[in-house]
Structures are given as structure tokens and as C-alpha cells.
Length: 488
Image (cartoon, rainbow, N blue to C red; front, side, top):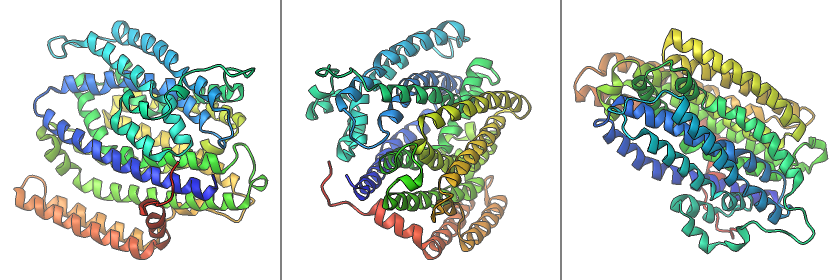
């Protein structure tokens, strides 16, 4: 598969994933808005923070390292060996589910059974759900590596093993080759390197939940409010940034050789990778800036509409405003780490693991102390500091990677002056609109506040069309155009 074909498939996959994520999350969003009016904050805190943390920890630690290792390089690997390696995620998941489930049941403080009933069975069900998801792993990696776009979308949409009957089920079972090792030991060693990194990355990704769960810095009610605001603020990150990161990690890993300098690779491949990286940085930067600017002035109104006074009173609006700024850092970090993890050698990954260890420790310490002094906002500030350090490392790596080449993909982090001016004016107008029109008045004033934001957003989008022509061309030709060619 040529670099252009890989790019076409990666962009198509990213587009489909974004559409699919939005379709499914809209229903969840509406159901949550309904549920918030009928359940307690304590129940939300236990389910959305503690039990969901158990699920995500088991899944992430069991499969993330295998995904990154098995999607590295081009597709000349022996896929029987890779599939055998991927099936190790299931017994690994069983071990994690049993170990962590025991911690959740016997070491952590049990919630009040009158407020949160059936806690024990819920722990078991969340662990079983994690194992069920791991059964999909061989097919997911196979579809991702070979750009089986329709297969991957069908897999996510169905979320059941029955959809596998259509696609080479027998070949996805473990098998022993004739005179060959059972697994590819080079990939196994790379998997171990990524596993150490994944363990640390999980602490950084879910660090605030670990602090809340194990150190009890917030009660269950405050944990529930924080989690609701966190989920609401991270919607764009899940809808847009994560599918882009997943799809283009595969693109960079296939187009560029891991651990090889630029001069040792094909010039056309490097040029395409640099162009795509620059445009992706510009895309997520623009989206992040828009969310930061408009999120500040519309956080209070959004929370009031979504969850009523339960969310709009107290610390909810301040949390969401801070989170909107954090989304910008999430966006940039997702793309920069997507590139660096795709091209790092195994030795560089191991060195990065040591830095991640230091970041993990400092993040947990910062989260603990900032939360004592600032409450829930301290978690977001600790995340911002941590994310800033990770971005700095990735930017230095990318700058060093392209130092002897004519390409400067980091220019994508610099929006045009016209766009910055439009965003600045929009920020001033919407803040003034919130102070004068929202949110203690009636619905007429609230609608007027929304109208002001709509006009400002239209002006910003118009500025993007006129001033960011290269980005618009990338979106139109790479992310929106339907590919009529044959998909694998």
C-alpha cells in the first residue's frame, strides 16, 4: 500500500470514526441529561468515577501496549504470530480484573448501601465488561493495520462478537506455525516497552480519578459533579481528537520507519508526513481555541440546560471554564504524541518511560495538594501543568526529528493573525454578553446571549475560510471527500 493510499484510508477512517462517535454519544448525552434529575450525586460519583475507573484501567493496561506495538512498521509481519500475541490480552485482562476487582471490593472504602446499593455485583459486572471488550482485540488491530475501514466501523457499531462471523473468524484464533515461533519476539519486546509506558500514561490520563478513589480528597457527591463536568468538557476530545489520534497514528507508523532518521527514508513519504502533521496541528489548534473562547462564556448556561441547578450552582461553571482551556492542551498533545510514539525507536520509548514516571509522580503530588487548596479545580490545573510538560517534550522531539530537513510542521501551531483577532473580539463580546444577559434573567435574555455567540462563531468560521486556506483545503480534500476507490 502506497503512502497516498495509507493517507486516504487514515483520513476516511478518522472521518467515519468521528461521525460514529457523535452518533452514539448524542444518545448517551441525552440519557445522562435525563438521569441527572432522578439520581443522587453520590451514585453518579461511585459509578462514573470509581467503577468506570476500574473498567478503563483493566482495558487500557491489557491492550494499549499490544496495539501500539502491533501497529508499528509496515505490514510485512507474520500475522499468525501477531494474532497469537494479541490473544495474550485476554488472560492479561483476567489477571488485571481479578487483582483490581479485589482492591475495589476489599481495600477501598465501601459506599453507603442505602445511597449506592449493590456495589459488589457492580464491581464484578464492570470487570466482566472489560474482559468482553478485550475479546475484540485481534480483529480490531487487524482492521486498523490493514485499513479495513468498513469492518472497523461495523465492529464499533455492533459491539458484539456476532459481527465477526463475516470476517475470517478461523484465522483470528491462536495457532502454531510450522517451525515458526509462536509469537514475534521483537514485537513482544516492543510490547513490553509500550506496556511500561502505558502503565504510566494511564496514571497521567486517569490520575485525578485515582487520587479521588484512593486518597478520598473529595466526597462521592463532589466526585459526581466533577465527573459530569469532566465528561461534558471532554466531549469534543472524545468525538474529534481521539479518532484523529488513533487513525493518524497508524498513518505515521506505516509511512515512516520507526527509529530511522529522515535521511534514511523516502523523501516523498517524509514530505507527506510533514504536511499531514502540520495540517493536523493547525486543525486541532483552531478547534481548541474556539472551544476555549466560547466555552468560557457559555459554561454556566450549558450546565444549567444540561443538569439544572445541580450543575450550574456551586463550582460547576468554574470547573467547565477551566476544562475548556485544558481541551486546547489535550488537542495539541494528542497529535504531537501521536507522531512521536509512531516514530520513536524502542530505546527512545524506554527513555521516555523514565520521564513519564517522573511526570506521574509529580502529577499525583500536584493533584493531591492543589485539590486540598482549590477543590475540584485543582485537578484540572494539575492536568494542565502535566499536559504542558508532555507537549514540550513532544515538540522538542519533533523539532529535532525535522532539524536537517526543509519541512517545519510545527508551524501548524501558529494561527493566522486574522483568526487570532477574530477570536479575541469574540471573547470580549461573549463575556460582555454573559455579564449583561445571562444567566439570572428569563429565556429571552438567554436566547439573546446565544444569538450573540452564534454571530461571533459565524464570524470566526468565516475568518477561517478566508485566512486558513491551506487548512480548509486539507479538510475538504482529506477529511470530507468520500473515497470512491477500493477499500481493503
